[in-house]
Length: 174
Image 1: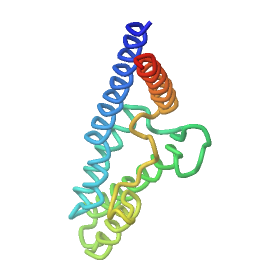
Image 2: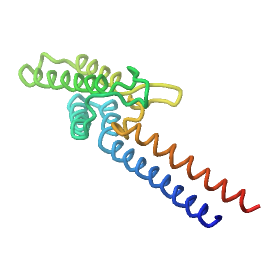
Image 3: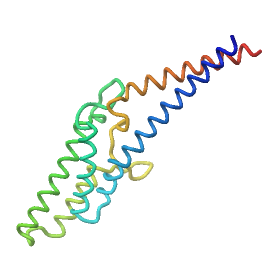
Image 4: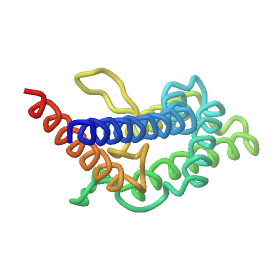
């Protein structure tokens, strides 16, 4: 009986670790493809760089289907509304594009103050300041969206099963 319990304990522990590694890989992919570009856009020195970075983040969001839905596990909240988050970033990029176009047509119509105000607006949209300092504004669990509930159940299922079999193996050892 003990070898069977040990075998199952190891299998479920390895499965739990695999879920963690998959989650980590998705987080790294999201960070590289979107979150880092949003941070760069918020810290951009000019409207051209900010627009470039927002465009790259939006491309990633559109390619990966992060344009609508809710990233909460169960209780849908406005804070986790992916559609609203996407539309805010899309609107910020549109504002920058319009400003850049206006400057191309009438170079003297867009002064430094207007550009700085646009950059401040972008910063307000993509960055939050909190106790931990400045961070990118993101819905929770956006790195695993739209499979956040699946990941929750996999973590819980494999974690509980691994714990049960490890405890069974330990108690049968005495």
